[in-house]
Length: 255
Image (cartoon, rainbow, N blue to C red; front, side, top):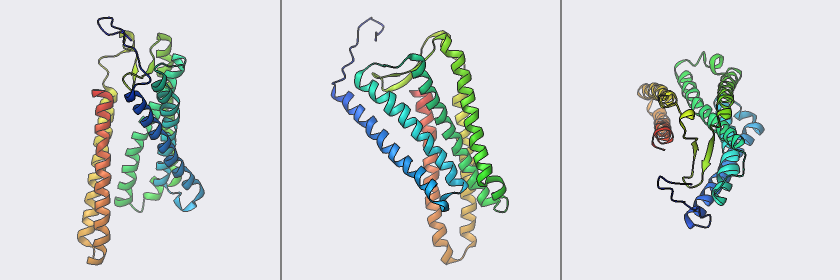
């Protein structure tokens, strides 16, 4: 790789920082694969776990498995160790693109989860009709089909232009081909789209938390202790959802 002064930068795969990064990628990949596999296994073996909320979590676990196996372990790890890719550029770009698009589906799924909680609290009588197992499965499949269709469209357009996504071992991140034909400098749609998702999740969480607090004020003293614990857990959930904005900010603006 050349910088602006044409100075050649030699990638050192034996460098301690490189080895440490590879070890972290490997540990994260293996640990994530094991944990998400256990989620899938538990859902398939335990009938009591087969509800709409857990179904969303299972699809998220499958997506995580795909990203961890095809990106972290199959692409990021070996390229970090040897410093260069052994994949055909079109294949590497396709694998990264599909991994990223499934990551997008996971973020859409966060909205479905927030709506699931909201309906359970505000519309319990209609919950089974709107968020039963079959309707929830349809929502998730539609999201997956939509994102896969969109990424196939983009690959058909960009690959003939030799516009690829690739993993840069020196930067430890994936990057696009930075040439004018490959970049739409005015396209901030993804950033604003995920900003909208964050706002939707925040609104749903605020409404759900308000309902739980109302339950707290109207229940007996004995019931309040359990509700108080639920409020604490839900506040933790809201905090975890807020990290989504940090993730998107660094992925699409600061990376």
